[in-house]
Length: 203
Length: 328
Ligand SMILES: Nc1ncnc2c1ncn2[C@@H]1O[C@H](COP(=O)(O)OP(=O)(O)OP(=O)(O)O)[C@@H](O)[C@H]1O
Ligand SMILES: [Mg+2]
Image 1: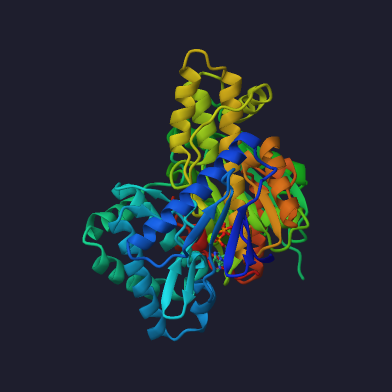
Image 2: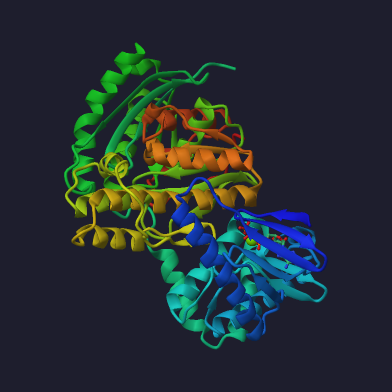
């Protein structure tokens, strides 16, 4: 088993063709909370990875969740994180990519799947396809609010991480999202509303 | 470099702060005064308080520093974010003093003030800043010429969440220290935990905690304990996510809630386990204060920024990433 990644909450190992994602205990939080978070997220991730694939979004095939429910085995998806590619791309290629990411996000929401951590570090570009991973913070929800918040997370990650290309990427993303998801209208309205809500000094 | 003495005026919420610093980073005076807290903060009453106390507090600060207004070479004030009426008190005072004494003026972003004073008063060089206070909850890092917000609350701030909880249950004000004390004798009961990417949300937690505390048979100590454990675990988690994401190697805490010893312990543990440095500035510059505004004013001025009067409009929603950082 070779360590291939250390995320914020998990260690990832490569074992043959399989990736083993192990959510490690965090000593900063009380044990009850720690165990609850690690198990619910691992199980949820397994469920949503499969649901997403059925909705037409490429995800690694899930093989197994271990018994305490903190370790997930899935297929290895070779390729770079989308995050790492963006700056070296030409503008046209980048727009194309984000349009496709928007389409995939639209397919998720059409199936009422909330990703929970939509960022370009949770997407892998493998061959011609874009794989979505890391569904541990996700949920199944029909609520417009949940979908709007999902998009807000993505939008804000563009602002902080890809600020040079924020507008261009967002526009392409929205184009793809609208096209893939007939219910996009109300979600985008809600997104604007969530953004407007006062965050500062609401007491 | 020529030495400059700067007066900083802070009034974004219930606290009024006057700080005087020199350009070597020596704090010559740092006075704060706040309105006695009863219920929540009433912007107009707070502004009234600041207006009445500004002159006497300024005199005290000048006295502490052994200086007169004529010795001040730069005036800095908080332009925002904050409560409009409070912000205007500081802005009007700063403009008036600037005109009367012919002193250049700079408007400072309050959140950036917290970061810069932390960098001055600790060994942190290029930290990820966890800024937690009554009105703000943000995880901020310097990237591409600006302080960018990687994570933040989607609704209320952590300080507000705890204070409001304490008010709902008549535990006394300010809520933070009361809840922290009660929590020491509590044990864990589950409460909702809400993290979305690197953002978080406290309003559901506030509602659930209030409900749990009002439920017969539940101990208030347990609810206080769990409120802290849940909220602070959420905060520590998004901080860790942002650390992994930005690949920064230091964590700096800032803001009034950063004095909480349990929160400090949790973030320190997380940082140690990730191999990152951990820094907390001294208590007198953690919460809102004038020194942080004065110091940020000095940094901005040094990089060539002064503001004309018409550029000193207050901004209630002044965003951290709105400011081009010319001094780093
Ligand atoms: N099935 C897979 N095939 C190939 N690489 C993978 C796979 N799953 C994850 N990775 C790699 O490991 C990294 C971390 O995975 P993942 O995002 O699931 O972990 P995480 O700890 O939840 O991340 P974080 O909390 O930092 O967002 C990914 O960004 C990716 O580079
Ligand atoms: Mg990830």
